Every structure is written in structure tokens, then in C-alpha cells.
Length: 146
Image (tube, helix red, strand yellow):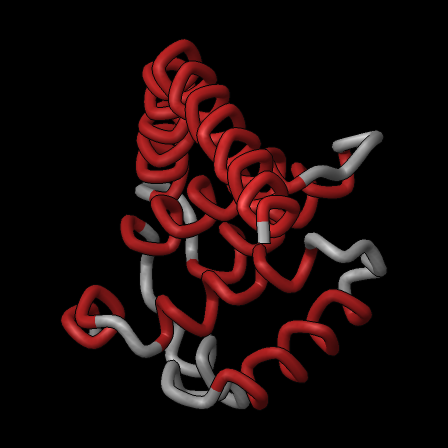
């Protein structure tokens, strides 16, 4: 019984250490991450004001391809740019044709994978970028443009 209590005590201490380290890291990095996220959205909105929806996707895919070492952080940044751009862009009548509705995660995943392949991308982070298109196509921002 003492061994079990000792093991649980060690595991609890490890959880506390990991949680403390995570909290410390977040305190040091959260402001910079939020600033970068806001900058990506603002850049997207600024650029999107002069583009059609398909131009936003082309720009975001180009940015994604330019990342020599794709990462989750780069994907999030490019996704925020894309969403800001799409929200500010000019609507195209057939832009959302074939894009699955927001509620079906499996269909969105399949569609995003196909969209990535069509864009010449095969990395694991591209589908999260393309999911922004599905979110946008089901959004009030898109509906209000039409």
C-alpha cells in the first residue's frame, strides 16, 4: 500500500511541475502570441479588402508554401490571415460550391485534404488552413455579402 501511495505522490508532483512550467511559459509568451495573431488578422483584412475570395485562398496557400518548415504556429498564423482576408474580401457567386457545411467534420476533413492536394500541398498542417474556408462559407459574414 505504501508503494502505491508513493507512486501516486510522485505522479502528483510531476503533474504539478508540468502545470507550473506550462503556466510560466504561457505568462512569458501569451502576449507575443496574441499580438502576432491580431497582426495576422489585420493583415488579412487589409489585403482582403482589395481581393476576391479566391484571391485570399491563393495568397494564404502561397504563404503556406513559402514556409520552409511548416509548423502548427505557421498554420495558425496563415489560417488567421486567411479568415481575416475572407471576411473582408469581395464575394464570388460560386466560391463556396462543393464546400461542406460547418457541422460535418468528416466531410470537411476530406474536402480540406482534397483542396490541399489540389493546391500541391501534402503537409499535415494544410487541412487546418483549408478548414477556414469551410468555416467562412457557413458564416454570417459570408451570408451577409450575398
